[in-house]
Length: 536
Ligand code: AMP
Ligand code: MG
Image 1 (tube, rainbow, N blue to C red):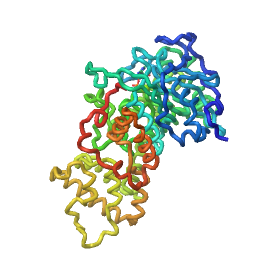
Image 2 (tube, rainbow, N blue to C red):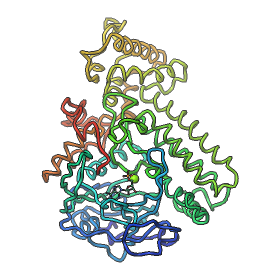
Image 3 (cartoon, helix red, strand yellow):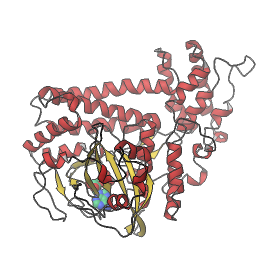
Image 4 (cartoon, protein in one colour):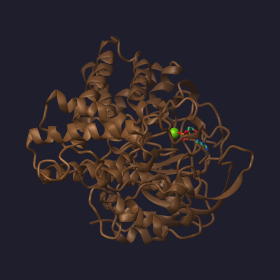
């Protein structure tokens, strides 16, 4: 029977039971030693109100339809109420930020309420983000504003429905508190509405959890944490032993490769791929200044803090993930007497990613069966074509699925002298296309058409297959911003509407065409739409 309140779920607090915690229980900022976490209570708020709710995640956890409306739910998911069945704590971790070792970071504004186990035996951690300071808050306040919480809530669920491995979001609660933020870092802070998101994942362990123990030479604890992770997050690998530890690292590398392949498939740019934002389970984690590619540009990053270096731009994500895995491997050295399995894992990442990425790109253009050199050339040439033509990443592939090849009537421009109208509609400035860009696109389309004709895949079949990997609806940056603007006025209906559309991102939905349009001109350089700061 599904439960109508969180108190009806089963809880089993394995992390705090099996791993050593901080000896100090007071909540003040400090450097913690020889511990994996600190117990900490969330800070109460004045007026919690649930404005976003993921029904399917609630059902997955074993909650029924009533749970959203219960006052107990809002109290718990805002941090106001911590019943005895919960054991809140903040994780200790470190990390490399923008390539430099940053020392202790930790859950500065995230508090894990505990671990629930479903009737099917699946383990889920519930975590409040923005629920007040912890020992890891450093100089910050432990809070989150509505705009970043709307973005995290919507994107977590959107990614899940796109089939991208991700942490989930159960709820979005406004707190009734105001939070001071200097959004542009220009000395003009303003009060913004506060909010708390309840994030959900099998575990929130990051590369940085291992790194902190390695950096502080807590070798015994490092070993214990590795074995705990294998037993809890990778139980299929069997008892912790040299063989399963090796297999574990290889798994982490492969899962990371899969996650990055998905990001490249849907046009997602994480924005802050620091090692503390890399999940050991290969889940997309920490939705901060992320963004979605609109006009195709491999150098694009949504993060204003990274505007100069572009370390975390779209095109660099695969190599940054490898760099992050290398930092993890370095941290794991004391546990692996022989470095060879670690090197093997890194090599596996590269080979796995390259293979998967090629398969994925072929799927995106509907050329799965063909193993020909020609189809690989088409894949290789496409990014340059898209970039030169300023094509919308999402709409281009949907229009390509409509591009007639086999069934082309003989009379209809067999030489393909002009860009077909559908494809043209996916370009940002078609009237300003240079001859060079037009030429590149036409050549590519001609080559593509002849390759499809060679394979003999019927157009209808190709369209169906392509539309299963190329989404029509993604959480475009400006759409999230529209939902935020409304929510800040007290109207959360657009959050709900977007969530509903993004639930089926591959299916055309009647009356929802306006969510599948190119970014409008007004959003091209607007804050929150094209660029985001880390202030959240
Ligand atoms: P992020 O860049 O969001 O992944 O955060 C990096 C580190 O800063 C993590 O340790 C966060 O917990 C911490 N942090 C970010 N924002 C806040 C905040 N408002 N209050 C406390 N800690 C924060
Ligand atoms: Mg983080």
